[in-house]
Length: 336
Image 1: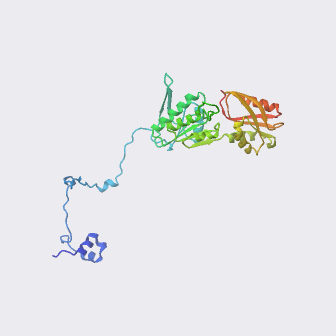
Image 2: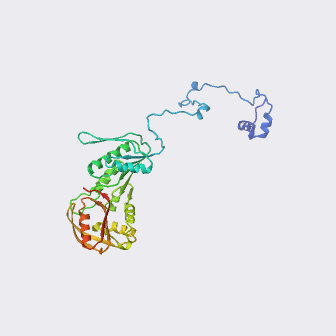
Image 3: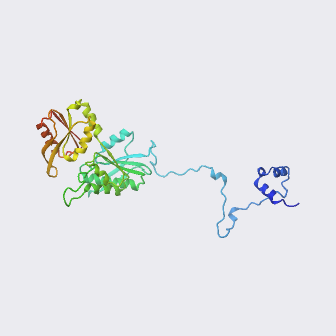
């Protein structure tokens, strides 16, 4: 029997749907027809390499859809609540960290922090943080150096544990007052601390009421600057003070911008400034008052109270100038 033409062979190869004529001609034709070619099955393991390439071993079709159960190694890979957010606390203020976690509806992460006999700090995470967003709550309050070093080691531990994002939550940012060179041969410690936190592996920093806003520029990573004004405004609102009787007082010239922003929230209250002269660190001497506070309720606004020398002498001056009441408001109560 003569072989089919090239067009018929192409139609047969493409299948019956490719050529209706070929499909009709194939109906009823026995399997022994020369149009059907019987192939011999060859064991794939016996195939020889062609041109040096390894033989192609076909994979059974069932392996493409058969589910494979992978073994699970270790514990605590995924928390019971299913969240990928972790909150860890240092030893500086664990009660604050617990309050934050409770507000978020989460549990504090398990962490082991201890000190060796020579004072070195040891940090080990007690649960997996791989691929998680980790928040480390650790203010650099006194002792500032101990708490700061502990924060750096916590950041390093999370980075080496393959955390996705590490956010250093520093409610009180130590060394914030060393933000410029007011005299010759001084260090800018705020920039140094920012570099240390960045190099340790933090991806973001969250701080509250920095001593000066330009300190945010010291970081090469994003900084979230949170203000404590809403809490103080709620407190003053509970005192039911008439807005016409209020005057906002800046305890020094450096806090004028902060006091002005606070005064705008208090129905654009008037502003007064205390002229303060320092003769040394943590030593303040009040010289003069700029503004009128007679018969008014004075609200002194500052970012921190360290030795309380500025606040105490400022309140004394305000009473001498005729202020009816004096409120001292701050975010960071250091009270050293």
